[in-house]
Length: 117
Image 1 (tube, rainbow, N blue to C red):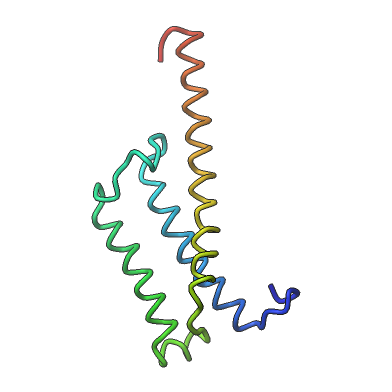
Image 2 (cartoon, helix red, strand yellow):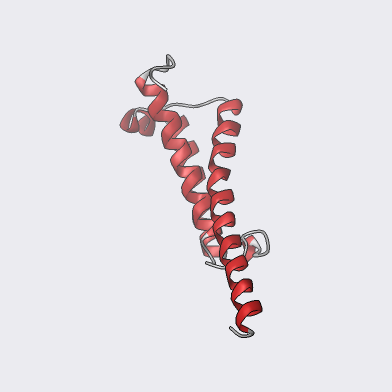
Protein backbone atom coordinates (compact mmCIF):
# COMPACT_ATOMS: atom_id res chain seq x y z
CA UNK A 1 0.00 0.00 0.00
CA UNK A 2 2.79 2.37 0.87
CA UNK A 3 4.55 1.62 -2.43
CA UNK A 4 1.27 2.45 -4.16
CA UNK A 5 1.40 5.94 -2.66
CA UNK A 6 -0.65 5.50 0.50
CA UNK A 7 0.52 7.29 3.61
CA UNK A 8 1.46 5.12 6.58
CA UNK A 9 -1.54 6.44 8.51
CA UNK A 10 -4.00 5.67 5.69
CA UNK A 11 -2.57 2.18 5.23
CA UNK A 12 -2.77 1.47 8.97
CA UNK A 13 -6.33 2.75 9.04
CA UNK A 14 -7.52 0.52 6.18
CA UNK A 15 -5.63 -2.53 7.44
CA UNK A 16 -7.20 -2.21 10.89
CA UNK A 17 -10.64 -2.05 9.28
CA UNK A 18 -9.81 -5.05 7.10
CA UNK A 19 -8.62 -7.06 10.10
CA UNK A 20 -11.87 -6.39 12.00
CA UNK A 21 -13.94 -7.48 9.00
CA UNK A 22 -11.76 -10.54 8.32
CA UNK A 23 -12.08 -11.70 11.91
CA UNK A 24 -15.85 -11.26 11.89
CA UNK A 25 -16.23 -13.30 8.70
CA UNK A 26 -13.88 -16.00 9.99
CA UNK A 27 -15.66 -16.23 13.35
CA UNK A 28 -19.04 -16.48 11.67
CA UNK A 29 -17.93 -19.25 9.35
CA UNK A 30 -15.97 -21.17 11.98
CA UNK A 31 -19.13 -22.02 13.91
CA UNK A 32 -18.95 -25.48 12.34
CA UNK A 33 -16.01 -27.40 10.97
CA UNK A 34 -18.15 -29.35 8.52
CA UNK A 35 -21.42 -27.49 7.86
CA UNK A 36 -21.45 -24.62 5.41
CA UNK A 37 -21.80 -21.13 6.76
CA UNK A 38 -24.56 -20.71 4.16
CA UNK A 39 -26.80 -23.25 5.90
CA UNK A 40 -26.17 -22.13 9.46
CA UNK A 41 -28.30 -19.09 10.20
CA UNK A 42 -26.69 -16.10 11.90
CA UNK A 43 -29.28 -16.27 14.71
CA UNK A 44 -28.02 -19.67 15.88
CA UNK A 45 -25.40 -17.94 18.01
CA UNK A 46 -26.73 -14.52 19.03
CA UNK A 47 -23.75 -13.91 21.32
CA UNK A 48 -21.33 -14.24 18.40
CA UNK A 49 -23.54 -12.07 16.21
CA UNK A 50 -23.66 -9.41 18.93
CA UNK A 51 -19.90 -9.53 19.43
CA UNK A 52 -19.28 -9.15 15.70
CA UNK A 53 -21.69 -6.22 15.52
CA UNK A 54 -20.01 -4.66 18.55
CA UNK A 55 -16.60 -5.00 16.90
CA UNK A 56 -17.85 -3.10 13.86
CA UNK A 57 -19.52 -0.44 16.01
CA UNK A 58 -16.28 0.03 17.98
CA UNK A 59 -14.33 0.26 14.71
CA UNK A 60 -16.68 2.96 13.41
CA UNK A 61 -16.49 4.78 16.75
CA UNK A 62 -12.70 4.62 16.70
CA UNK A 63 -12.64 6.07 13.19
CA UNK A 64 -15.01 8.93 14.00
CA UNK A 65 -14.52 9.82 17.68
CA UNK A 66 -11.62 12.18 18.38
CA UNK A 67 -10.04 10.53 21.44
CA UNK A 68 -10.00 7.09 19.80
CA UNK A 69 -8.83 8.56 16.50
CA UNK A 70 -5.83 10.07 18.26
CA UNK A 71 -5.11 6.97 20.38
CA UNK A 72 -5.16 4.61 17.38
CA UNK A 73 -3.97 7.15 14.78
CA UNK A 74 -6.85 6.31 12.45
CA UNK A 75 -9.66 8.20 10.77
CA UNK A 76 -12.82 7.72 8.73
CA UNK A 77 -12.76 5.94 5.37
CA UNK A 78 -15.10 6.38 2.43
CA UNK A 79 -17.83 3.95 1.36
CA UNK A 80 -15.74 2.60 -1.51
CA UNK A 81 -12.97 1.59 0.91
CA UNK A 82 -15.52 -0.10 3.19
CA UNK A 83 -16.89 -2.07 0.25
CA UNK A 84 -13.43 -3.11 -0.94
CA UNK A 85 -12.47 -4.23 2.57
CA UNK A 86 -15.73 -6.14 2.93
CA UNK A 87 -15.15 -7.83 -0.41
CA UNK A 88 -11.62 -8.78 0.59
CA UNK A 89 -12.88 -10.16 3.91
CA UNK A 90 -15.21 -12.50 2.02
CA UNK A 91 -12.16 -14.29 0.60
CA UNK A 92 -11.81 -15.93 4.02
CA UNK A 93 -15.39 -17.18 3.73
CA UNK A 94 -14.68 -18.66 0.30
CA UNK A 95 -11.47 -20.33 1.48
CA UNK A 96 -13.17 -21.91 4.52
CA UNK A 97 -16.12 -23.06 2.42
CA UNK A 98 -13.75 -24.70 -0.09
CA UNK A 99 -12.02 -26.47 2.79
CA UNK A 100 -15.34 -27.72 4.15
CA UNK A 101 -16.36 -28.85 0.67
CA UNK A 102 -13.11 -30.79 0.28
CA UNK A 103 -13.84 -32.60 3.55
CA UNK A 104 -17.35 -33.36 2.35
CA UNK A 105 -16.05 -34.78 -0.93
CA UNK A 106 -13.45 -36.90 0.85
CA UNK A 107 -16.05 -38.15 3.32
CA UNK A 108 -18.39 -39.13 0.52
CA UNK A 109 -15.60 -41.02 -1.21
CA UNK A 110 -14.89 -43.04 1.92
CA UNK A 111 -18.56 -44.03 2.24
CA UNK A 112 -18.86 -45.02 -1.40
CA UNK A 113 -15.68 -47.13 -1.46
CA UNK A 114 -15.89 -48.60 2.00
CA UNK A 115 -19.66 -48.74 2.32
CA UNK A 116 -19.57 -47.20 5.78
CA UNK A 117 -18.53 -44.20 7.82
